Every structure is written in structure tokens, then in C-alpha cells.
Amino acid sequence: MIPIHKKGKDKKKPASYRPISLTSCTVKTLERMVNQRLLWYLETENILAPEQAGFRQFHSTEDQATYLSQEIEDAFQEQKVLFATWIDLQKAFDKVWTDGLLVKLQRCGIASNMLRWIRSYLHNRRARISVNGRVGKKILL
Image (cartoon, rainbow, N blue to C red; front, side, top):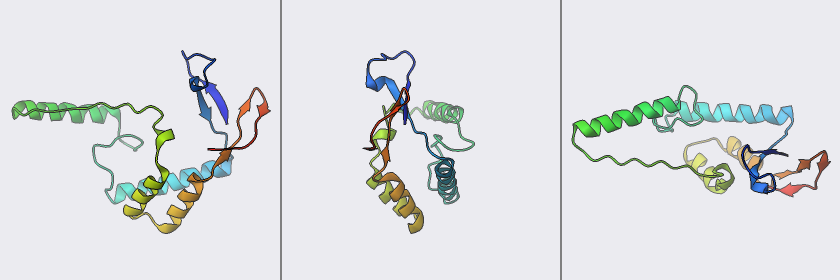
């Protein structure tokens, strides 16, 4: 991994850097294959909510804005109260409960061989951090 500085952040603070993982082409290819198969399954089985746009092909923030505008208009026309919440989760990917994610994938019907691969990929991962050409010892992620 190499740390990349976030614009406008204090260079003296470790939190001001984004870790970028440098992996082999083989690993990147496997990641893409698993991701494509997983997304295909979730889409074809209609597991994802239609309102979910993040990380989905042919969905965008414009879709979300249109959906919200329509909900507001409908509530106004029907003289109903509408509540909306915006949530911005900091470091959301760092906080994913991987065991819970695996349980949810299993409940969605993801095949056991795919689950085993994802479990193996997520657990006991190690990396080395490289700063200014110096590489540190392996650390558990």
C-alpha cells in the first residue's frame, strides 16, 4: 500500500492520507470477475432495492434526485408529511462488519463456493506500507 495525501488536509496527520492498494493484475482480474458475478446475481434476482443507486450500472445521483423530487411532489399533492434523511458515513468501507456481510450474502442465496472465496479474501489480509521507497513489515488489515 502507498499513502496518497488528501487535498486540503494536514500532511502531518496520518488520517490525511488515503491508502491505495497496489495489487497484482491477477488479483485485480479475480476481484472484477467476482464483483461482476455478484452484481449480476443481485440484479437478476432483484435483491437490490430499486432506489439503491450506489455502485450500480445505469444508476446515478440524478436518478436519486429525480426519485426524491417525485416523492416530495407526491407527498405535497396528497398533503402528507415526508421525512428525508441524508447520511454521510465517514470511512464506511473501513467499518464494514465482514462476518455480517457474509451472513447477508448467504441469506441472499450466494453460492457456497463464492462465499468461501469472499470469506478467504476478506479475512487475515496482510499488507505492507511503502513510504518514500521504504517498505515496512507486513501488517494485518
